Length: 172
Image (cartoon, rainbow, N blue to C red; front, side, top):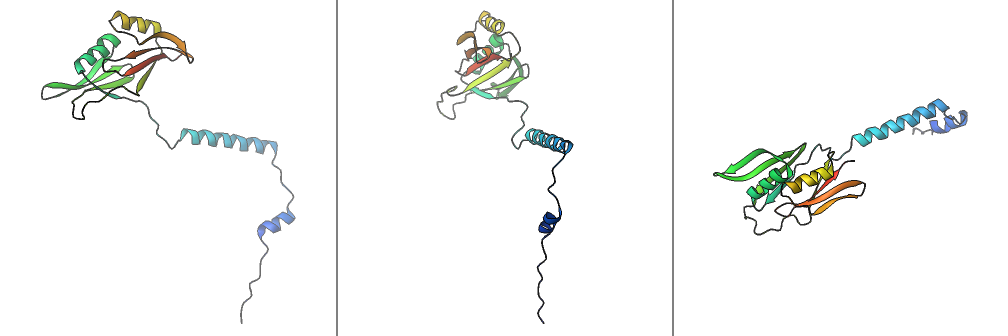
């Protein structure tokens, strides 16, 4: 004898017939909205991308001794570490506040390269831009542009001895 499958009415249909349309109360709506905001905040802070704390570029320079003098004596960086190979200086770590810049001596293994083209460093400071610019000039440095107000900040531009372009801006 074959069994017959009796179709049972779905719960959704049964509950629709017997239940009135429910509308959430104002406190329930507020709680739902608060929960949605919290979810958005949490998902924004838990981005799937990188969460970086610092950036330290390495600049390959044509003359490491000249570049070290410019970054330290003219701009005011301090030398952290120095790296030598067979008695010759091949690189250095420079620090200014929380920023680190690495310099490495061009070794010619990749042939002649144009450096600094299509690349710019942006440095931000809470210090007075005009005082920084005047200090650089007083120590023999040359500005690519004088300090100016633009895009909501005060800034000036530099070019290092190898040709890397740098913009120094206020954070205010």
